Image (tube, rainbow, N blue to C red; front, side, top):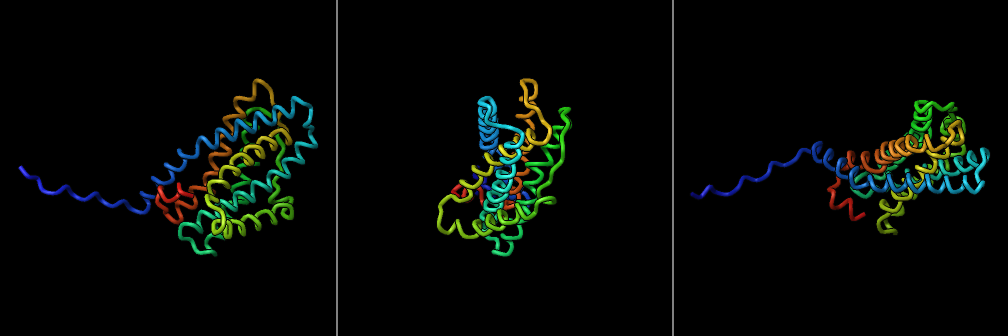
Length: 225
């Protein structure tokens, strides 16, 4: 018996589509985060084994990598929002909100709280509050780059997110060893998990969750960039 045509699939709500897009993107970018964290651990461990890292050098490297993280985060978030329908002013706003507060959480607050939970004598140092002159130019340049770069560079968001993850992992690890954490064979496992959380959570919020929630771009279109 002819049952007639199949009913058309029920259209998804914007909220449901955004939720599915966020979950899909988080799964898509998990390998980036794990690989970035592993590479950061190997690099810092090798430099430490060669005697090239000291407390002063660790802190100096952190104060280089944290602003670099801010720049990359602002670039990725601004570019994503702009590429998929956000007005320039909207992209700038989310580029600012998705960089300074989110990177502070990733590089400083999560490592600080995680270090305390592991039993280390951690010290808090928030560059956003204590050294705004250091980070402001990096955030401003990142937002400007995010507005302009997609017009001239293919896959801007893919490159900036990949670099963002690695730099974030390095910055978080250097914060740990600069402000009270002692790496050892017993702590490297918890540090691995802590860094994955620090990278996956805030970095994917700024690069993926915010843009997808704001503009609801189709997954296949996002992956082309």
